[in-house]
Amino acid sequence: MSEPRLIAKPVISWPRLPSGMELGYTHGIAVDSQDRIFIFNMSHHAVVVLDPEGNYLYSWGEAFARGAHGLHLSREANGEEFLYLTDIARHLVAKYTLDGRELLTISAPPLPTAYPSSEQFKPTDVSVAPNGDIYVVDGYGEYYIHRYDNAGTWLSSWGGRGSCDGQFQEPHGIWIDTSGSEPLLYVADRRNQRFPCFTLDGELLRTYVGDFLLPCDLVGDGNHYYIPDLNSRVTITDAQFRVITHIGENPNQWEDERWPNIPESEWKDDHFISPHALCLDNQGNLLVVEWVPRGRITKWQMTYL
Image 1 (cartoon, rainbow, N blue to C red):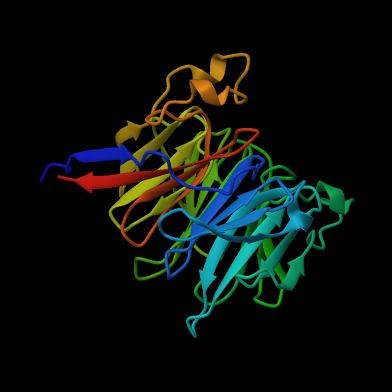
Image 2: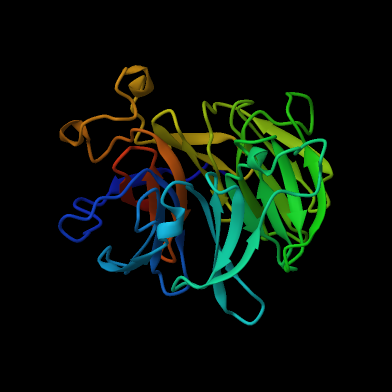
């Protein structure tokens, strides 16, 4: 059976932020069960919350103004939802309620050889397993994956710098797939241009390579993977990481000496500058945030024919 044809259409004039509100680099995005949208950015309102139509609701998170990076929304067994956030400036991961109350912080793991200084811990992303274990990827630090229990106690680590199997070169994003019989952990190994797949105990099962330039992260819907690529495109693959298409592709944009600080007057609705993270809402729309100084958020209607 042939792969369905995809039509991706950007939603114009979306979202609608308050007049005068300026964001910083938009690094993370997540959607809760009510389709409220959480945007993580480097500004004094680091977590901006929108309604499903893209209207501003509220914001919080001034403490993350300098280090906002990875964002993950976790739904616990009782249905309650929480945000996990990484801070590359304060060298920590934190768990928050959706309205901005801090519940837990996690700092560098107790590995003195790898981390003689806690400042070497620069976590770029986080994901939570069905059993509550927390997986953190140190993508701007020492290139390890760290596993903690739900109370923040360190359990194990694996990886490290390199290009051999099980090693990483800037492991930037992490995502746990729960659609199969056993959860699987995928890493966006950005500078190695690949996606290694692990068990939750750290056993490497396989590594996917393909037409990936600078893959920052990934999410899946059971049939496809959606990959924000910093080199001005979003890649969509099938379940075996075979590329179906690139959307919003802006070839060679990254070669512009101004990149990623491209003036807004030159932005095009159907072209990306530097996709950094993405998610799907509950209607299947694709929401993308980009690594640009004043932030950029776009919504794409996805139709498979």
